[in-house]
Length: 224
Image (cartoon, rainbow, N blue to C red):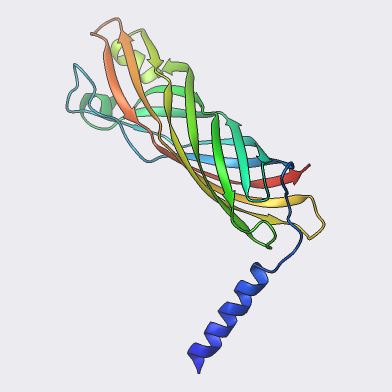
């Protein structure tokens, strides 16, 4: 009896969430969203070559506002372009570089284009998934004061990254006739770079870093 009641309740909730209403965004519409994002690296660095082959690095999480624009090709198909920039630091994990701590900081600019499928454009809760491409530019890369205190003046550079992006999220309009919506968005980005450190006191060092961040975003949007 309890099982039947729970099943009926779940069915009723699902029916409410998927209840038919006019599509929030139709083919030809534009949606502009503003999100607050956390870019949380899921990977790490390989060994630091050639001087510290047993030592690696970790990358810190970055936080920033983000702007994205979606063009709805049809009621179900959308194209989304995002723009944001976040600051990150690379930190030594063990041994000599671990005792130094922060090695460098850099800014990442990762424009990402995804092709989305919106499952229920006329429902109360409108989930979507997406797949696309990312190109990340690293700029304003600087050595840390701790690193330069240990090895002297150092030049830092990071190579750009090109990879895929996976996406999932949902939109919830504020009302049946409202142009405003709440958005929750998740992305996984294949992001790899090679960091090069060129100190004056020791030979140049390089480390391959697999950043591969999970990007979590929460915000609001407006339909045009």
